[in-house]
Image 1 (cartoon, rainbow, N blue to C red):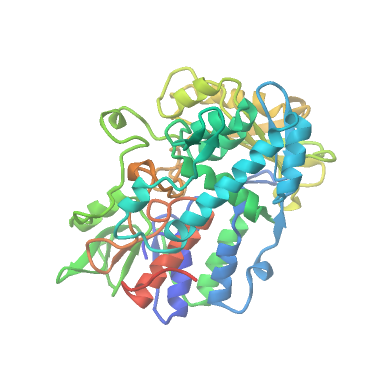
Image 2: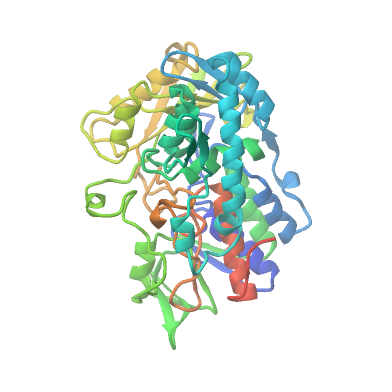
Length: 502
């Protein structure tokens, strides 16, 4: 196993239970991939995902790999409200967790009569897209005929009274313009795509499943910080006798008779294996093998969010993060998560994939976990601010951080007066557990969009070599990472006839 990310560890635990001897080689000094923690002066901060959707993925992992269920290994807390949203016009709404009726009522009250009904109707259509894509995009290996998923838009058409016909949205932006018809509802919808670095103007309508997943399965926090989930998975691997070797970089994948047969480490040592599972970026994996890993019909990774000539001039966005240490108690009623939407949607989206010297104020997510484990005492608070943007020019990081703090003042009263210190983490810095450094993003696989939003299969053209993690099927995000591990384990244990997780 190459890499100790969440997907790789999920695969390792399952394979060990199935009777395989599993060794994990991780080039850094710890496990968890992007699920890390930063600590200073008694304050703790999640440096990767701050919340969990679809906890059933990890509940299933723990059921299938041992006697102790997930809830005995970590404390899961349902976040309520799911999120508070502050819009560009100053209006705001707090959305209850996993309650369609509650969300409809809250939106009607905050944004005006009819807003909640339009959002509720959208969620019904989003569920249809979810039902059509859940198994092929989350629970099954990537279809050999993946083009069917690439060409067919699963989000349903909507009757249009004026046109006396149905009209099918092709992008998230079109859903907002045609169906939601309110810039605040559009911002609410598009924030789920922005969190993965996706531009809603060219992201397929099938991405409606992203807000639906949060609505249907709720938003959850792991007490002690999300790093506790990584710890629990790591300890489950140890319980199943998985061996971890840290500070061990894999230089090359060995092959024998046209099949993966082990790895060569940076120190020159060779390790033989019957199967090799790699949780690394596709380009790095290809360099490790010296083989063509994609057959003529395989889905290949794209170079950026858009295929074609423009892809060469676009840059990959990342998550820019600011950690805040505050004096004083949070105060009653403080939302765990507040999303402060950008004042200029067009400027934000135009900046998403194109680097520029002058940053613009983005949509900012403010996380304020009321968690004693993340603060020195009850008279202090740790806060994480994050925004997704193209790389910020060198020397402009502090100016961009100022924009995030400015936005966060709408979520944290008296923020500047309470501030003890801040730490800024720009995308790509430090190489903290990800292939592209801190803040690297990997979006979940999505149907339609000509295949640009699908991810390469877990199997490769080199027999015995498998891909796992956010850069492979079924894409990025904690639930998808867990499922990639389940799919790889199933393919190894059951062979090419494996049809998916039950």
